[in-house]
Image 1 (cartoon, each protein chain N blue to C red):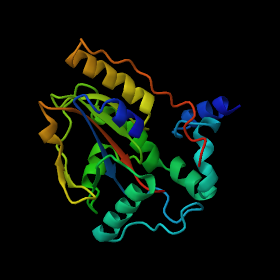
Image 2: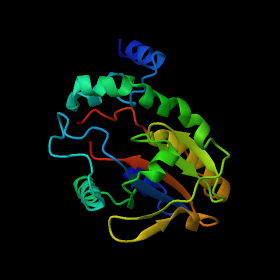
Image 3: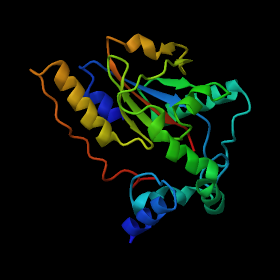
Length: 93
Length: 130
């Protein structure tokens, strides 16, 4: 049932996260109406549809220079020739 | 991701988390977290995240203009794996540790074939504990 729900969601352009209940586990702690409106909005759907074309595999990753929570500065260019890196976004909510 | 970091601790791999805008401020499970109104508040929230999750991964904080977040795709939990040449090797709208593990295993094995690494991370249980 949840697999079908996930397929239906993807069909209408909604991209739930992975995990139990076809990714809808996170709705346990979200406002359902507000979240539904957000994920169904053209703006958010656009983020998902445009993503594959932004920096596809093989493309050059843009330079990012930002401060860390412990007061350092990280420049992703400094990893060049030294390390592979994984960058992922996140927040509390 | 901490599990991944530990797995690749002795290889040429770095992990960086970028703290971005809150996708669900003041919603049911997060009443105390408002959307950022100033950089100081954003940094404070990022530090709270590090402390709450006991993160050992550096967390960079995007500016209030969300410049880098927008450039990379404006999604709440996207992921990129970049090789030593600065080329994107993997990009995904949602962070999946097992997918990242597969790519990293290939990259580090190519770096040093005498020490091959196999993908081992299993995310089938992710999201079970809320």
